[in-house]
Image (cartoon, rainbow, N blue to C red; front, side):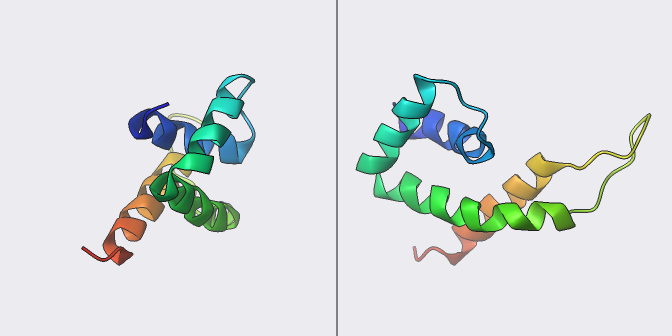
Length: 83
């Protein structure tokens, strides 16, 4: 598994929505890729904050926007990493 695919799958892995064998492939990648493993751990720390994310209004009931929270967490993580 390449990092680009793994990064998209990390959120699904954290939410527990991956089926085998993709979950195993993500886990194997995390075991060998320090950068993706760090992102996985950092996003895992952010997940509890998703409950605090304000809902946005659409053409219906108010719905949480977890992708916006994940994107913000990834952006914050990139800002903290030394260059």
